[in-house]
Image 1 (cartoon, rainbow, N blue to C red):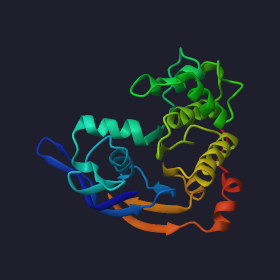
Image 2: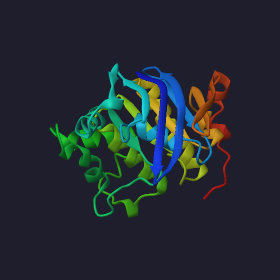
Image 3: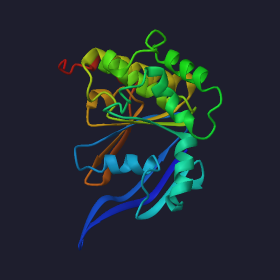
Image 4: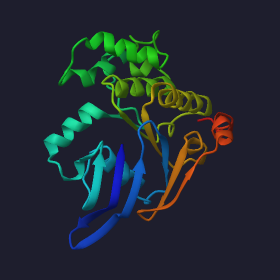
Amino acid sequence: MIELQNLTKVYRMGNIEVPALRGVTLSINTSEMVAIMGASGSGKSTMMNILGCLDVPTSGQYLLDGEDVGRLADDRLAEIRNRKIGFVFQTYHLLPRLTALANVEMPLLYGNGQNRRQRAMDALKKVGLADRMNHRPAELSGGQQQRVGIARALVKDPTLLLADEPTGNLDTQSSEDIVKILQGLNHQEGLTVIIITHEADIATATRRIISMRDGQIIEDRPVSEAGLSLAAASLGRPTI
């Protein structure tokens, strides 16, 4: 599904060049569940932006379903994002005055928005929020708000789900719930899931961990089935 060849990204600040990615080569297959790990400044956020067609590489090649998206114009990139990619963010990005249902409907206001209400309801049911559809974000817990965020990402039936620190603002129990939802979407529905995280316990809940440092991949390893099955039990971070 994803093929990166010698990918670089350089940001220019006046006369200074700041390399964020340095010759990254990577393949991710359809229906994989992958974690991209790294500390601040490792390049993982830049990687997510390029994988999500929010940015383009300085050099190298990014093939998404066989199409070289790294060379496309902004309007074509927007079309691909709209059709193929769902995003889940650490801070939810929900509109406070809208209900959960209305927030999930938002992506359907553009393009093919047929059966908006039913599709939004189905997405919320999929994440276990059938009884919270008419609640506003302030009436929901952090974990419930993140479920709304996942439902919003799912409502357009993407083939790729990018989750940027999806449990970063959540307590231990809510983190476990979100991880289980993402695992279910991958295992049962075959959705390709990429989680950007700096937390080892979250990464262990995937099937493959790609570690980054200084804009390069320093390790790419599978997660054992034993590690995968124990992932939920290992989410031992302090409750917020």
